[in-house]
Length: 431
Ligand code: UD1
View 1: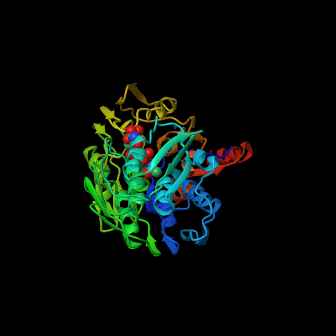
View 2: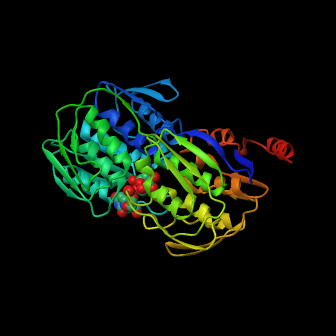
View 3: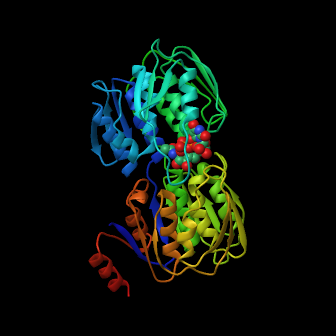
């Protein structure tokens, strides 16, 4: 029953160093399957999703050596199975990247179909459409995606009907080793798409246009080993930016690519906060008089859906009425009921929330519900008067490395507790 318990009300101040991007790392780890050589991945975040992905690799026979906490060497020359165990898929959706990677290398894959999830139904029809276009027979049987390209993968011209991060990466993985020139149109442009493409190119792939609407991939015969550092995590950085604003603090956020944070910076500036950008850092100074603004989530370079709960918490403490439109996932406002327990005033109608800013939150016991909602509730707790307990923090640990320790260094009174006794001790300490 791990929980985060915190006493809010202290403005967060100081420096925080951002880790490697989880969502880039997940695609890159699967990409390591595409060669028999050693692949060294650096700046790997030590978070649950990444560790589950590495476990799944081991399970099919890959060698995985953790050189240090943030570096791993993967060797897939002895992979003996093209089936991923159900257990891993249940823990982490991104194991669908194994379909693209196994297809690319072995022309066969059998991966359980990931189920729905807390933020909405998440179909993979665009992934499947891409694989089929590359000459793969795909069937869903007994809950599994069974894919086989009997005559190998052949290049294709693919138009994605929906801008999908997962489908873009998955098709890139498979097409890197396909015969001929694949063109994928209407692709996602998120920073991690570019990072996975750069990673594959560092292995000898020939991928052009990542970061634009069209990706062109000239298939190669084989890929070789590489030593590749993962880019900094846009969403972890954005989360600390919102934490600075919501607690009226002052945080220097280091090891970031400020360009990736522009949509988040723009909204925090509109709210009246101060932001300084440096080469590899941003500093956010939270204003005492923040104003409401409207936010709409969109594919990159638009405002990220993965930042919607965190900015909503920040807006809920700004004066005036904000409108937040969630255009990527239909069910991403469930945290609103939890936040209401802390005194927020938010109405949800379909994919739109109307936030009436309040002058402060009060502490409560709340449930994390999903990864980003959980992080947002921690920000809310740190801004609230009194004690907040965030339950089900396993969700948060999927994507934030030592979240509580990074927050403690910024002056937050927060602890990870595992039982009532520890929680009681914390209450006594801060009372
Ligand atoms: C990735 C991120 C996730 C982020 C999301 C949007 C990873 C591991 N996860 O998820 O954190 O919130 O991008 O930035 O990188 N869709 C279809 N058919 C498909 C695929 C997607 O209809 O085949 C729809 C989805 O339901 C959703 C939208 O397209 O409405 C975007 O989804 P997508 O970009 O694929 O999200 P994920 O890759 O699952």
